[in-house]
Image (tube, rainbow, N blue to C red; front, side, top):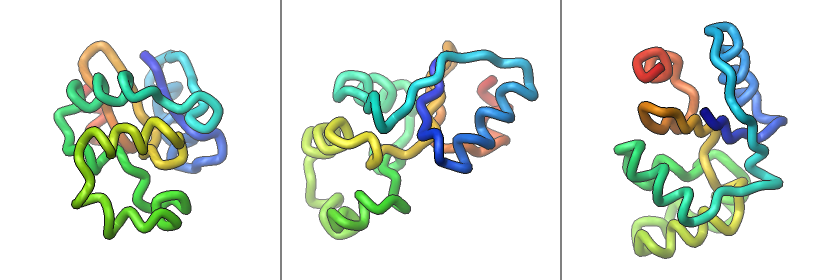
Length: 115
């Protein structure tokens, strides 16, 4: 499994602790220094079954500074993927990529159900 996180994010820390507590080990990747590629994002999006908007970190400064709340609905899917791949801080985290699917954000019940 791969856990894509931001080290300073409290939600990521909770997700990491939850994984350890439940006996899961995974590869760790810092989203700020190794942001996901467009190809990875497309693959993860397809495996997640989630709307693409769920991949955006809507509470982050980058999202707010770019005024994406207003712009996102008028952007094409291709433009959204390009934007997400350009700045890891725009991407919702944590992202857990596992053998049974992709989880975006940490919701304990969802993680329990998938893992």
